[in-house]
View 1 (cartoon, rainbow, N blue to C red):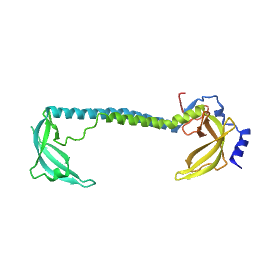
View 2: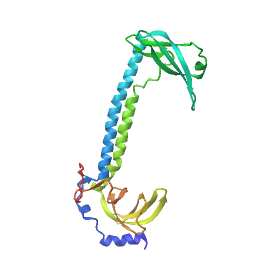
View 3: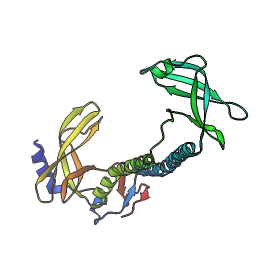
View 4: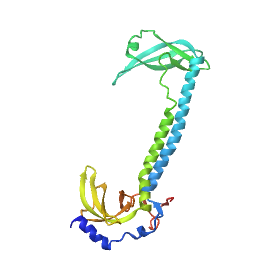
Amino acid sequence: MDPKTRLQELKRHWRPPGELEQSRPRELRLKPAGVALVLLAAAFMAGSIALGVLLHLKASADHELRRELVEFGRDLDAQVLRHWTTRGKPTRYWVEYAYQVEGPAHRGRVELGRKAWQALDAGAVLPVRYLPSDSAKHFIRGHEGDRMPLWLPYLIGAALAFAAWLVTRPLVSQRRLLAEGRPAPAVVTRHERTQHGAVVHYIFSLLSGASAQGKMGPQKKPPAPGSILCVLYEPDRTQHNAVYPLSMVRTARQQSRGALLPL
């Protein structure tokens, strides 16, 4: 039978599940998948704060050490102990050196450019600037190292907070649909094969008597063409629709347990 004809026949006797006949907005509860999504979003948000603070402290400390070395540091020559390369793309050129102020010698290593590395002779020295108050803190002149930009912690924190917001979008969408959506009968019209399964296309009836289209999936075991489904749709935005039941929220009227969602 033609899906549109079948849909017209369904309108005469179809009734939605009892919990969807409640007055809107419906009281909702989270399913386990919804709880997991909330916890994931909370983890992203907590991570954005913690990582932002830690990176800010690290960047501030790096910049403060650099300032102290420039303003108060002293210069001396470090003795080159050995130099070597690490294979890869590109090849990296390394030098190990040592210098002594008072007490034990301080060692370090630095990556040089190929020409500077090849120019090193036996007994070569490297110019070091060290901090008198803590002689282990130093840098090689011309190779001060990369300092974290002060704006980077804020960018990373904002990116993680945005990820937390994105994670909640499917849950917010389902919550709105189940709280305010209108139930309607639907008929599966066809399957669209993908590498992850079948995308199910369906048509459903609107209160006005017209019909609209939707899809779900992909699914490994899709309902056969001609199958009858229950669909929820937003009255003012019919393209926002989904097959009931939803994966992350349910109505509070059902008997299964869940966490109460604020309305």
